[in-house]
Length: 212
Image (tube, rainbow, N blue to C red; front, side, top):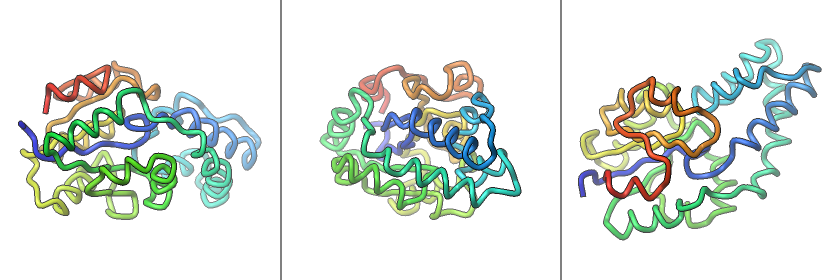
């Protein structure tokens, strides 16, 4: 075991939520603002500072309304979510090997629990959960990763952060953890991930086992 703690982003890393995020962003923009959003700009912001920041980019004067419409559309769609192939097996293998697991996400804790309801094994295997309501600063700042480590009594050199966005890699690097970018999320292209300097880029969950 090279690293005792393995922390994961949620959206685009453990669960295939990119499509429902994009659908709900489009719904909110069309419903509230009467226009299609810039899909590339929306996609590039997923996984970063969180929903408030994303809606501020759409229209700083209608943030609350955009968020309400987004959530009303998005939350029921969690019933359609799937995990990525190989994720359940990866997490169970990591636990069997003695690793502690955590989720560090830009989502609110209450929204994460919608995913936990859909996939109870995620809740069962997660030793620590850090959502957007747990730290004042959010990815790409290192604070969420460092807070997860603090709660687990671990140091950055004992930890890995796995994510599908540049925000994840920047947060992991800034925290001093080993950073693994994943190429299966469908939200951020490999080139964007490699540009921020992950320690590794993997294309299947099973590849993580050899790195940790």
